[in-house]
Amino acid sequence: MINIQKILDDIAKEMANETDRGKVADYIPQLAHVDPNQFGIAVATPDGQVYTAGDAGTLFSIQSISKVFTLTIGLGKLGNALWTHVGREPSGDPFNSIMMLEHESGRPRNPFINAGAIAVVDAIMMGHEPKETLGEILQFVRFIADDDSISFDHKVAASEMAHKDRNASLAYFMKSFGRLKHDVDKVLGTYFHQCSIAMNCQQLAQAGLFLVSNGINEHTGVRVINAQRSRRINSLMMMCGHYDGSGEFAYRVGLPGKSGVGGGILTIAPGEGSIAVWSPGLDHIGNSKLGTKALELFVQETGWSVFGD
Ligand code: GLN
Image 1: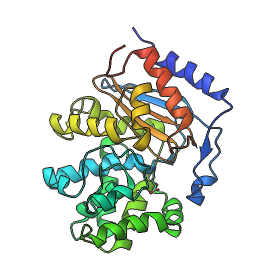
Image 2: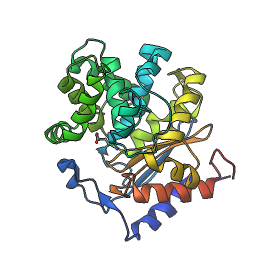
Image 3: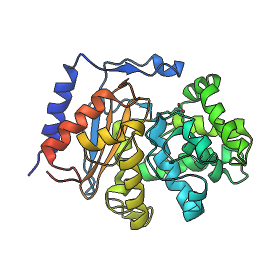
Image 4: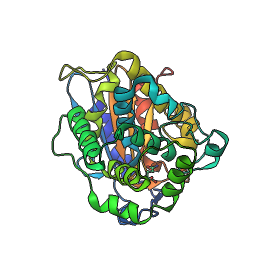
């Protein structure tokens, strides 16, 4: 029997001694204030258990991890038609890159790079005001995490809006190809708020449970999506969830995962559990440095990689 709690305690202890913690994202000024000396990890298993260690109860900005949730909503609303808005191939480029957009008529390569997530949010707005779409996104996240206390961090969203130049460029570039249907500022405002959702590791691990068990949260008995869709979302997380670091993450961890510049990573071990880690210091690609290291250790100890023990 694996002792998950002991594994997490050991990892948290080891991470506390790390000196090379990466660099906190500062292009969103509100995130630059976060203390890099924090580390949290939580594992939720289908039987309803949640194991935690370190700062697993501290709220952080989930940032691009939210793209998994809007992708799920988008597929629910549009079905396969979502793939006319966005592709499903790894980009091999940074998360905020504009390069491939020109080659592919403004269609982003996948839903997890910024351009892709902006295209997804435009697709799910369907003529509605940002408030309504944001209400829907928040309701969905609260539902899958089974936690009504989850909310936006309006200061983070405002901070990103005030420094929107790169994302605005991506949005206008896509719009020039006729790709976005709504007003660019409304789409960006919605996107920045979805990224600003504040969660802790425990809530995030619980939110991932439906992807562990073929679309069902086994503990609550609720089916969120069908099995085929769950498998497909996991495959996108594996191939594209860490941008140009996706190959490295698959090599080191071997699980579907989605990172965010807030320093969080949501990782799915199909059939086993959902693992959320958080440490604000990032590597040069923008993925949590200690978070990745902790997941590498966790998979070594548990044998939960999809590629074998
Ligand atoms: N909100 C961030 C941005 O648009 C998300 C980036 C990320 O988490 N990689 O830049």
